[in-house]
Image (cartoon, rainbow, N blue to C red; front, side):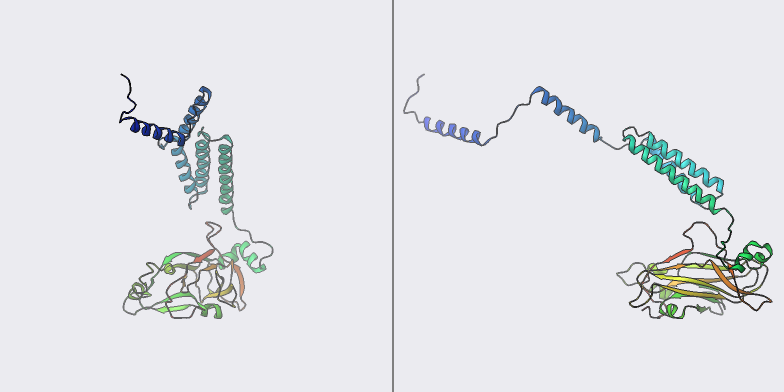
Length: 342
């Protein structure tokens, strides 16, 4: 069938053809990949699929690592030396085996992790064995303290031990007795000695601060006062001689001291008297909004029964870890006694 020049469909067909040509000009031509490029592209996709697994699975290597981690924590506890060394060795063996069995890790990483764990366990074993060795005073220490530590007879007279551990407010006060509190405030910095004594009720046991004061101390915006975490310290005479004026000089270190003041201050605690077998208990409370670190002394001074002159002796302390003599106290949002801090 022949087309007619005057057909009414011709203008519409011409316009449709022009639109198709215009749209094809704006489209970028698609390049067809060669067979070599297509193969390289598929290898790349396979590699990425290997690097990104569908899901993480808990394997036996991970379980071995968890066992080694728990064994290392067990070795850090206050347990017999043989058991602690066994835990450290088990930790090293389990973790090294776990690292070496991860074949998808680089060899260098596996060797570095295994070597680091082994060296760290050797260091922990060294300090654990060293902590069990008997204490031998150095030549620079006071001559009387050295003689007392080395001579059994003198050591039995002056065996005074200090043990401090974490506690929490309120402080229990027995009926009719005193509770001794080392309050850290401006008065403590300026006086350098003394304790805040809380007298208990004669009829019943009480506590300080009172529970009503403790519960009402929180502002709504502060859900917890970290200054309620305190230290409970026991100073005990484990010798066979009565001691007088047993004085311990602590060191107070303020994280941010008040303007114009020092960062470290000495503070003396005195127990008088301290008979054989008795324990002098006191508490350390920070009532200022500044963090404080209290450092225990290595020696104490006292006067032995029947002697007039004071002497210095080595203070016995539990050697559970090297950081135990350092006692950090958190800042408090409540001033329990009203004493100024700055």
